[in-house]
Length: 283
Ligand code: SF4
Ligand code: SF4
Image (cartoon, rainbow, N blue to C red; front, side, top):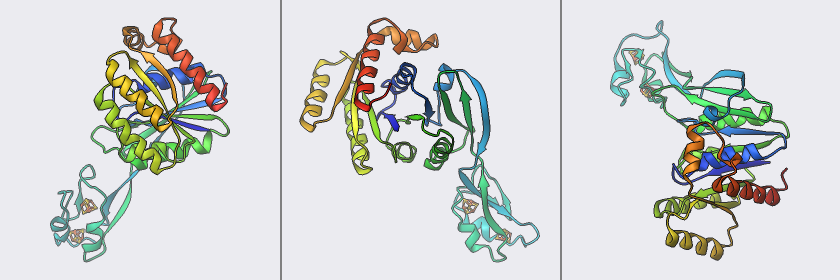
């Protein structure tokens, strides 16, 4: 089974919930940090690095110098200033292929380009797979797709929990496609609610059923009421509510998983994860 944890907006506690969920389950499982721009589960969950390898999620132009006649056609073709008389600046190249078409001597081809690394960490309780984007490189759905493909090939029957990046862009779509359920973490603010509605539209499009967790409950009673009324009207299951609790930030800054705490938010996280277990028949 594959469960993706998502939020339309960043900073609402999605990764906190993911970390608590994966820590409170007991069945064989792998957690995938698909937020390749800024993975953070690897900071919280240390373990033995089982594999680290380059991901080739992009293509860049490559010139066969023996065929290049230094005519300069590629300079004029490239809108990104990524090639000059057959000399390519890979960091600028978008891999669009325009120069491949216009080069009169067919000297240019597209070759795979590595823009990040995949890391597989093994722990006693679960595996963690994440990617690190090289500085200055562009994130892409392809990178997340490759990350997930690796997990599909190596995880076997293990439960997959995917921590999606924020937003509704290509990397998010690559995170939620072909999952069995999406847990949408919403905080009771207008912006989070608004962005969650967009996330629901994406999930509807890809026919992924979704369930909601309200995090930071209590910070705005009227927005929270509005969200709950909406969920009730639409028949969207509310798995639980986690109260706003400063101990969560303290736990995270001390690299402790908030769901393992016996304080108010920790207990609410445990109760919510219990609801998740019941809903999806997990242990
Ligand atoms: S268009 Fe082709 S032949 Fe001309 S400079 Fe560029 S790479 Fe060389
Ligand atoms: S592939 Fe596109 S971006 Fe890259 S050098 Fe050629 S024209 Fe420029």
